[in-house]
Length: 521
Picture 1: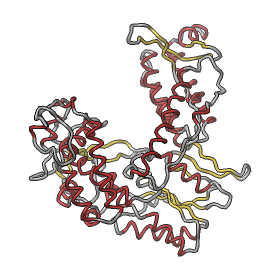
Picture 2: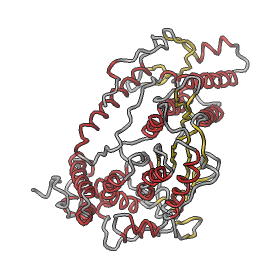
Picture 3: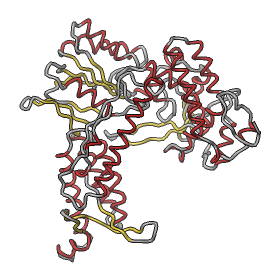
């Protein structure tokens, strides 16, 4: 192998700085690096599945000290949304040279984590959520060890845990709730659980004793403290929100909750004891209210107590499936008249979304039409795509009507001395069977003007989602074909949605669903 070329070798072989400097950052073959890193991650998962803990440790050490894993860790950190936010040192990593220097700085010997930069973001209830922003070097080091920890976390994870896990989403959690509650003889009582300040209260002692990662490094991140208004504060408990590895640590702390609920249900002689969890939000389902109050809830409290956590009294409640409950922005309710369980967008989510839309109109009173549409379309499409798997067609129509009312007020306010017909001709157009299309104009890359329409939520097709298998993990080669099929299905559905949004101007709102969107898994 020539030193001038960065030929990807098995993990642990590329260890010198000379081979790393041989090529520029943009010349690195990322596909080969990702394949090699994943190969070792699968070996770690296999060893964990076989309870070979010493082998897991040795493979983790090999991964965290390999140059390929360091390159991949830096790539993920610098390509994330938070890459433009610096830590307490004020340093960013934007150029290829800076990224290569960051790779070479990832050395375990003499490593010391810097304090976190404390920032606050608004919560849904009006409060502020504290975030701890590590430096770029600390983020890269956490991402490096996350590559070694994630395969172990996947092997230990609860089957029905869907938050902060690869290839899982809120749609999987919603579909699991539907399958558990939809049948005639299903559980009818639900415990809506919420853990009070989960990330901020996790016991450091429990993490250090139970997380299979190098203790010295974990101590550095947990005890780094945070800097706020030039004052350093200690962190005696919790894992910081904003850290790369924090979500996986919180997940591993809560793994085992599903087994605890199932055992408590057996003690209560109730065979329908199920749990669905997304991060620190979870719901427990049982056949009787007494089983939830007298057995399952106390078992959950004891489980959390060992980890330094407790249930939030204001957010934890017991409800009946016929009354409905909200979970992850969805409303899940069984209706007696129709005898069916329906999952719809929660009213709070709809009202919150419409409030954001109205705020956009208010903040852009004098903006150009295309500027306003450019800010509205991503929000409309993002919100509608989130609910495209549930019973949301009526809600989408209601949202479109509310947005149209805001458009009407926005146009009338700008031209108070103009009549209705003048406003209609200036801001609206017709296409095929569609009328009253709010539009602007934009210039494409060829310098040609084209229409820029406001998108409608009701034009997003409703397609049934296929839940991931409980035992499926990307670190098991037995599921490679399964994940390939799921990826193909998502690609087909994505292309179909794009076609629906872009090319239905000449068609009515009654959409034809092609056969190739059928579930492949």
